[in-house]
Amino acid sequence: MERKKKLERKTSETDIKISINLDGEGKSNISTGIEFFDHMLEAFARHGLFDLEVFAEGDTGVDDHHTVEDVGILLGEAINQCLGDKKGIKRMAHALVPMDESLAMVAIDISGRSYTVLHLPFKKSKVGQLSTENVGHFMESVSRTGKINLHARCEGENDHHQIEALFKALARSLHDATRITHQSIPSTKGVI
Image (cartoon, rainbow, N blue to C red; front, side, top):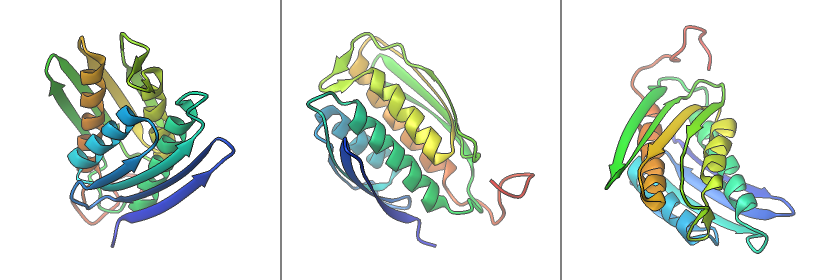
């Protein structure tokens, strides 16, 4: 079964197109109008071995919130749809990723129940054009529409390093959790 999906989301604030292949090679083509966010999505694709295309036009003249949120919403939806009934996936995974003085941890359960717990002690309000408060909002949006239980935390002195390690940890944990490891649905309930 091909685990690929193309989705679009158009609102009065954003116009977004996403294409993802969970069984890709880490190729990406990203354009959101927020350069640091593009860099993070490229890192996500590369370290998760996902082929990912994201094209977003948003009201970034207002701020970056709507674009970051809607990309997260659509990315979570695409991942959830790629997984179908989730038969055979590993389901749970975690990753610890260092970057210089920073360390990020992400643990996920693709449980069908979204819940997000974050500890993201950033020091600055922005890295490039990306508001650091929207990093957590992106994670929550992916968790909610992806129906993923997500715990994420990071520590360090440099916000760029913390955020980059966080996106890489999200990618690695999602890569591992979405691997097909057996033939049944990984739940005592028989459904996810």
